[in-house]
Length: 138
Image 1: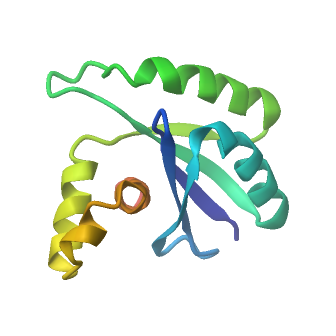
Image 2: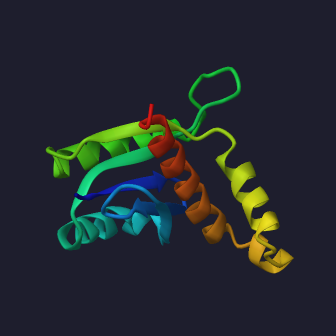
């Protein structure tokens, strides 16, 4: 089998998570500078079999797209152009940052580590991926 890759897209930094090859467990992979994201993804996909990419869909509480969606759409279009056979899906990412902070607290991370925005982005990508996996179980 191959992996599923998740992206928590941000203007400056982007968190990335992947499943194991059996698509059972979501793991944080890294956080990359967004301007290096496409190169990172293309290199990663050359090295590891990836079945699909899921991207966090930023929504407001009223279910409308949030402002960051205007950055994600051009990224998705470029991704589909460079990887035309790769399925790309959006996954609701509401509350992922809150959940990431709660996970860091529950994990006993020190305040300085909890303020590491790159770590928050990576954990958020993991939560996006985990919610995607759970939605596909039923």
